[in-house]
Amino acid sequence: MMKARRGEIVEVAGPLDDLRIAEIVGTGATVAELTEAKRWLAGYKRTIGDAEDLRPSVITKVCDILRGEEPEWFDG
Image (cartoon, rainbow, N blue to C red; front, side):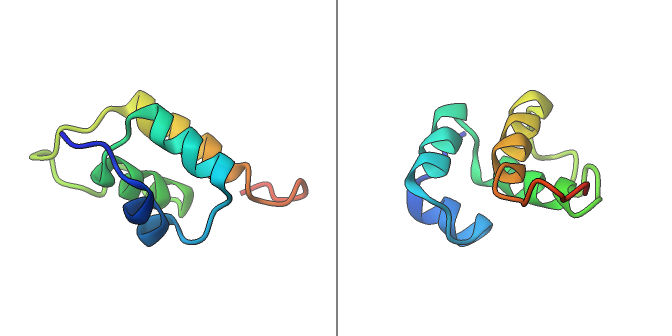
């Protein structure tokens, strides 16, 4: 499993500030886990097949980081 790099993070998550990118890199998330986190935020669960070795704890951390970009009033 390869950690997601800056360019891959921006490609999946869209433009983020450097702090958010560093936080995501710090989780050790893979591109698949980052993609899954984006889908979780959209309301889907376990959208990538069982063949992928995903770590739910990492996906949850990435969700929290990405959710931090949302306005305070967002109750998503």
